[in-house]
Image (cartoon, rainbow, N blue to C red; front, side, top):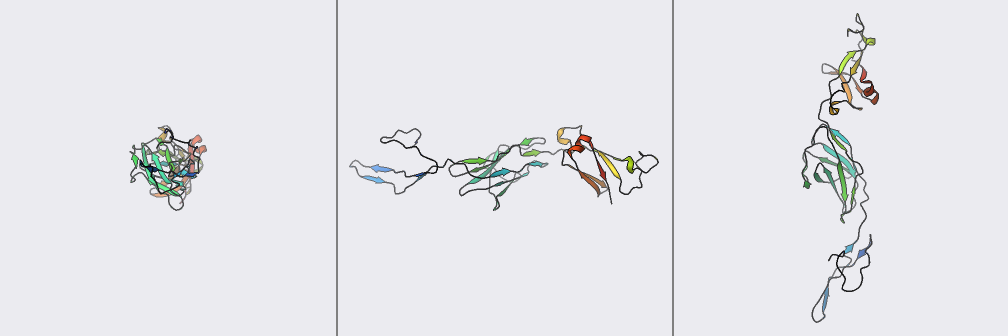
Length: 231
């Protein structure tokens, strides 16, 4: 019985309201007027309210084309969580603290097919809570996943004149055991290979780490970062 299109044989359908429960009585009547009705009651509940949530997706920049996605979701009774990315939808169960994770390398979609994630691309990841009445709540962010499998362009390294103790201030000879070196960034390549704020620059002597720095927006504007090395 489609209440949206059916015409009553008697009476008028009072509008059904969110949050209310209604008895639905099905009755069989024979030729003699004898009747039999169903034995249940309050079979219909109207629920038009979206789940309370909340639900989130963590932003991620990954060099793995099948990364592990994460986020949070608070599920009410009877509610479920799905996560959709690049054409595939997965059923995900949050842990007891409301945290969820999805390993794209091993998970099997419940619908759709995962289109391979490509270097340099950004993808929306949609986490959706659904209740038993098919009301939904999705996360409010977008383009949470960026794939970057390209190695950064190689920088150049030079001893600062203030640390150069050789016969000239440009011969790269020093007696300083904690010299300062200037690492010049190569930002001339494709955007996916350029350094960004938050990248870490490390200096090694052979296999030994002797200095490091985290790039700032000012470093990117200057085109270099100075790192003082040490034993």
